Image 1: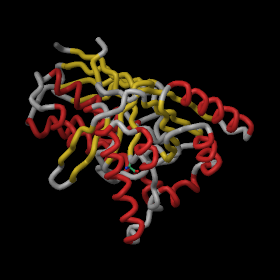
Image 2: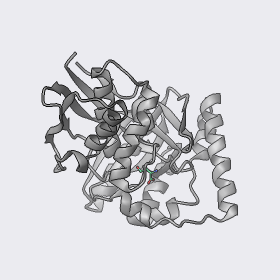
Image 3: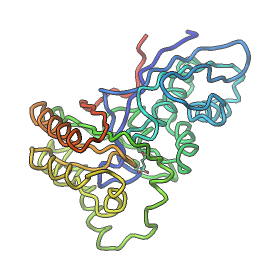
Length: 307
Ligand code: HSE
C-alpha cells in the first residue's frame, strides 16, 4: 500500500466537567486526508484545500506530528500529505487534532503499523503543542480511538476508552468567529478554589458512571463546569441565552466545545436534537450572527480509511 485516504473526525473536548481530560468523537464532520509515499525521503505537505494554513512541515500540525512519529522510528521513507479541511481552524471542534491524527494514522498504516492506535496519541499531541502551546490529548485521543476518551494521566500518558450511549446526539453551534486555543487558554485562571474543584471532580466521576450505567439523566446533570466556563463563556455571543434555550428544549446538557467558540448541546434522540437545532438557528439568525451547525452521533470508530 502506497497511498491512503482518510476521514479524520471532529471532536468535542472537555465536555464541561473534564477540562483537558475528556473528549468524544463526532461522525457528522471531519477532514479528508490523502497520505502517499514519495521517493524523495522527505515529508511534504503538498496541498491544503479549504483553509489558509502553512505548508511548511514544521509550521503545520500534521507536519510536526508526522515528524515526531518518523523520528522515533528513525524512518527515512518520505510521505506527501494532502488535507481537505472541512473543520474550520479555531472553531473548537478539534481542527488541529483532525489534521494531526490523520497524518500519524495514515503514515503508521503505510509503514505496516509499527505502532498501535493508542501509541499514536503522543505523536498527534505534538500537533496540539504547536497549535496551542500545550500538548493536550482530549481531542486527539477520541479522534483516534472513537467514542469517549478519558486522559487518566499525562505523565505517564494513560488514556482510557469509555462506553457511549446509543441515543446520544451532539449538536454543535459554531458562531463564525475564530478563537485560537492559545488565546482561550491564556485567560484561564491557574488556581482553582477547593470548593469548585470538589464540585468538578464529583461531576466528572458521575459522568463516567453515567456512561457505564447508561443513565442519560445523570449524564446530563454531570455536564457542569464551574471552573473554565464562567471565564471562557464571555467570549461566546449570547452563551447564557443559548444555554437557557438548550435546557428549555430538552437538551441533556450544554457547554463550550473545547476552547470555543463552538458550543455543544448533548441530546437524547433525534427529535430533541432537531428541536434544539431549529431553536439555535432561529435565535442566531435573529441576532444576525453567522454560524454553522453540525448534528452528529457519537462516532465509536474514530478515524477511518475511506478508500
Ligand atoms: N482542553 C483543551 C482546551 C481543548 O480547552 O483548551 C482544546 O480544544
